[in-house]
Image 1: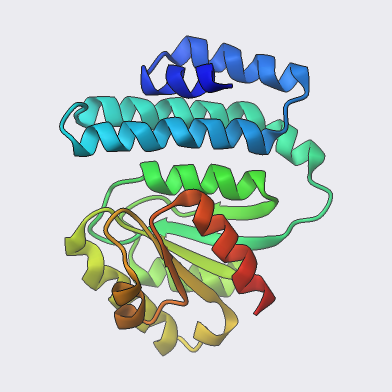
Image 2: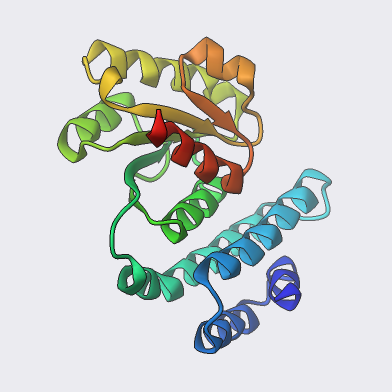
Length: 207
């Protein structure tokens, strides 16, 4: 399985696809496969931060991860007897980064969450309307740009104004988020890690 992580870091798309399929045939738990892929994505992110990888590599890694999710999605659907909870997920307005969001989405789905993904650069009104229509347990707001912090705060303010804040727990995620941002924006939880994010979502459901 370490080879799978390495193949993702080295952006070997065909090799990754074959390895994931082989692991599924072997009966490896989907959670284990997603975790190894997540570790690979984390290293890609670190390489990007250090200037060893650039935007094309980051985009390619995101596409590889998306293809992995497509492979395991039918297995998840088959294995899922009851859903843990529903998450509405979005990268906030004025931010178009989705790799972290997609990693979280895959990890959440592997843990039994039903994820309604709105994509990137999502305005507050769309998120509010989706809360009303989908009635999720949790809203996940993602950002990679510090300039999008205002969008997080504005989105949560609009959720309050619409009178649906009490219906959902809100988690914010992304490399620059912090406990301070959580407190300032009015979110319930904050994380920089997809794996921790899923754990926090499970804890939020218990509250």
